[in-house]
Length: 216
Image 1: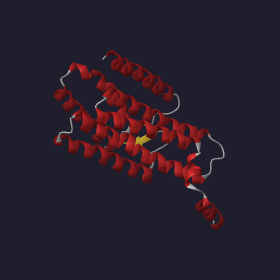
Image 2: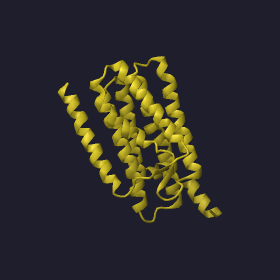
Image 3: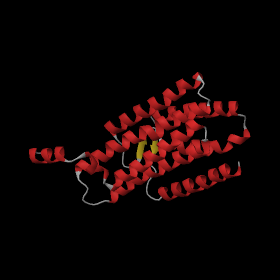
Image 4: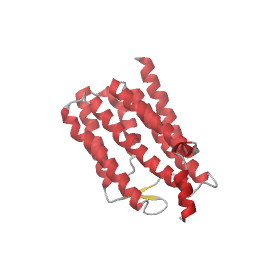
């Protein structure tokens, strides 16, 4: 970047980047994650799950919108990448960690697990920011959003177990997922038409969890 371009980028206000459509989508996902954290703390786990899965959908959406936008500058792409990564730590690190703590009734035994979840998200996202994808369609390790997608499905069986037993199941499952997040294995990047599968999944689980809330 030459001096005039650098000077121009320094003069661009921070709020200017917020008007960028992919960044708006990213921030919508952040709102879902914050609401999920809020309801997890309150112990309203169906709503917390709904917030988490919608955060996944918006996370997929911002990338799709960004790739289809024409004339987006390097500065907007760089800002959007940083914003997306920071929001991912909240959505797929802090959010499930708080969910685990709250479902475990904030028992100190759940603190190590919460730390591992957040630390894993920070390590994985830092690695991805430096090295990126192995190729256009392959990740190193399991992407963090898969943890939330799987958690949302598994939590449907909450009613079949007592709370203490199911909290251990959720604990063990999330710890297993963190191993795959950091493992030196190749996993596919779901893109293209997979977004329609995710949309159906999110809408379906939203209806199911809403029905669970209504039937209580």
